[in-house]
Image (tube, rainbow, N blue to C red):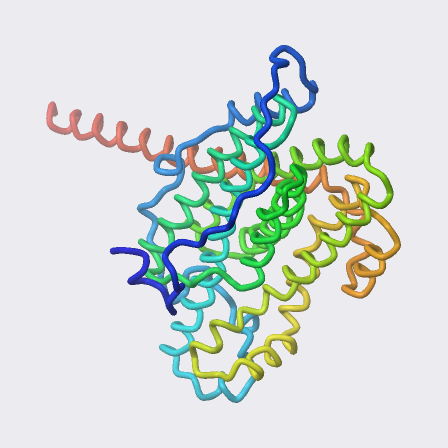
Length: 370
């Protein structure tokens, strides 16, 4: 079924065109590069995988409870709207919220694919071009997987959120080669990692957990790439140039924070936009979710050298300044370990099943011989 037939509301024009700006850069130095970045490039090659084969798509998903979301986590929980809802209504609300979340993941992954391709084109160093080429493939795989999950398991898609659209627009319109790094690798990828991680660690459903764990294993490398490249480059910039990038980060963080309301879903259930925003802002779960979402961004921003007074004050206002001291390397290592452990558990279970089948066949053969 065409995706347009699954949209909860019309996404408008089927194509979104952003005028490209900036230069395409070639490098004639083919035998030199940063060791750390080339090592990451090698890891990117070694860790390629096929979403059709690594993920168990035969796992069933209840579209009316695709993530096992508890009632307390629903924005409408405890409100008069919730009290009037039937069990079927609540299931439909869960379906819409899961669709909205994974639709934003899908649109963000397409944006990441385009930004990674832009980095290949515009970054001056060949080692960075090499790695970005592997990331472009990763992002294509992620978009494929999220699209399949929405089409086959939920049967509902939401258009791109206005704030995510605005940040992508700002990122791709900027002619400076480092801006796709900053907008995508640090802000959008950092926020996505935290959102993926929260669902991965709380869902009781095996298929979305597999999807998120394997995608996060890739994303951990992508954020590491952005940190390496920008940390090196930002050491060379003037204070004025650094402040320009900090302003971009401040605006982007406010946009991403406001993206998380999901008011489009509530509006689809007949709740006026202003009331939907108010209900979202009252949600204790949303406040916790927002705080966790910046756990990947703030330490990364600090690590690459953007830590001026105005940026710090913005993080004070958001209540996330202390997250700058988080151990980002440890978080990324955990993402890798969780995906590898999931593989081990799945393959061990499959091996046990194969052994049991062989033993059963042998036993049947003995009975027939007897």
